Image (cartoon, rainbow, N blue to C red; front, side, top):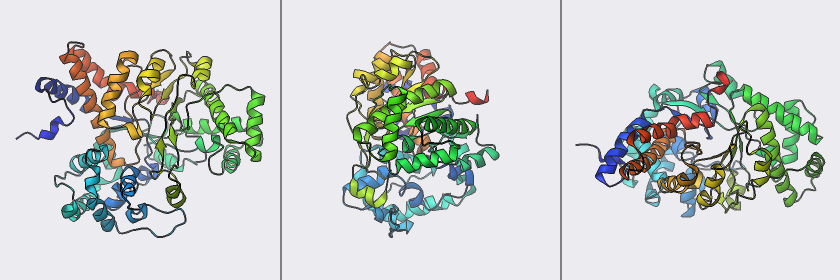
Length: 476
């Protein structure tokens, strides 16, 4: 009897479903390009066995821990480390049992879809998770993790990942990437590459921004006591990232605002920040100006700019104070793009040497602003739905919203944006299934020939992300 899950996320209409199967089969053959994510490069550099199932799948996944927090289960009971080092649960089986007892909270969520598919496709499990089966599922995964075939590099091969991009700060010494390069896994054209993420030395509201800027100067060998020295230090670090294989920079600003200041105005802002007298308006203006400055740098060194605005970071102040950043305390906000991006686009939007991939956490902007902008400027591409929007429903709405204005080829392909290494193939497969269903519908409606749909789905799954993010170009 055929597995009914082979038609996961495909259209219900039998004829369209058959088309979707054929198109998905083409996408499923393609290697995975993962051009934006947050997997720790040490995992692959050291290639040690993964820890217990809870430490691998639950503790680092803020999609999961924030849901339980919303129901009164504090992250410490799920093993999330505290800022001050105070005790949290360390027994993996206890964490797993607590999570399984709350599994019903995830009904209908993408988190459940990804995790169930990870159980099935990565670990070969068919037992449904629940309070009664928690130990059975835990033991089965633990047994798999003890096998050599489940070491990180072996899974990387099995997942069909061609390139995985991690994300590092300019203050990172890139030692793990150096080890990967020495092992033949990193460097330009490598299988694991870095991404330049300068938020902690650009955002004056970041913790210890002034101290970070001083450390930037020390690492780069430049005097960041002046704005000119600060720019020189950033350029120097970008050179180091390019040498380590980077093809992209990434900018996680609160808004999409850009601002073209003259050198004296920018220097005055920078000096106020270093003296500790900058206010919130100064911080926003400096972030906005630096996006234009980074666009100039990208024209020179070729790094693709990724702009990820729209998150109110650390909105849950208790969570931030107790557990720190990136543990589920961020909330999306409405984001304006049309006027915000105008200074950058006026300066460089038609320059084919620049490539800017813009993302959003505000899906209402897909039709109104982002698709028309991506369809009207040579430098601008539209990034896939991410973070709070990377569900099957929004992935479908994304294609429906943007294709009529931007087409397929002003979009940049799928990004998984994950810290959960084992979920990478699952997340890419979900996106490929949604695209297969969308294209199948176009064929069924006689809006696209099947051979065109076949070419398009391979482009969306593989060729577009490889081209837009300049994967492999540095080694050519």
